[in-house]
Length: 371
View 1: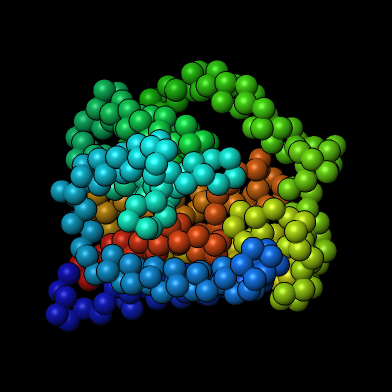
View 2: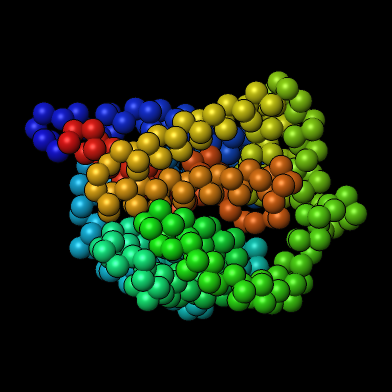
């Protein structure tokens, strides 16, 4: 790319920039609305979470700009280093002196006064490694020992470290990303299906042998059977959408955030959007995500570089999967998982990593456009 004459990638990829800015801006507004009650109770101000989210947004814009400025080829020689760093950080989550426990899980660590979630960074590092490894092995990608086994091993290493946090939702997202990227790269379908017979027993022990996960599955199948206990989250989420109607109750006028719906500013912020902005707001959010995903897939299809193609597909799959799972949980069509809604849910690590992914996608798109 001729950087002396080309427009900066952030400005040249307006079809990515605009939806992301609108979604993130909506996120700040909805974090304020959804968190006002719990913010006042916990911090004696309604602005606590909104102010932090606005700060995270400014930081993430800088991260996106820097990532868009770096040629995506930069990540190739860094793939193994990035992978090793993520594995190290996931290992540090197991250190009691460093981890931060919340909601019964220890998914965060505090280093040098900064608290962040290593599993969010792990998703991106897995995408970069997979893109590099799969593109490098194109000549032998059909071989089971070359195209499938090494990538299964890396995913399994991440999965084991994250399951112990515990965070089965993130493992599911990373599994979808890994298998999608292998499929796009040309790994044989029969090889991709190889783990299926082993997956059923693993899911049995990870889900039905763990009480709270089993309860989530049963609540998903029939949330109204126990609306005051196991089905509490899903029923209140559905009540939020139902009471919102077509136009919504109005910004700030929702009731489910008033200590009824758990985590209204993080996992279930989409429910608050449905209640306060109605069907129009829900469809608008889906449209913005649709534009972003369509653009990401278009970039992946049009680039001639194998590494860039697989990387763009991985980044787009990551954003799409997070969105589908979060909204699916809120709408009651998927079992409850603690995953954030990209660009909208409260959380610094997730927002910064989302923006980093977008910046990388912008650079691939700009280089593809400029030859």
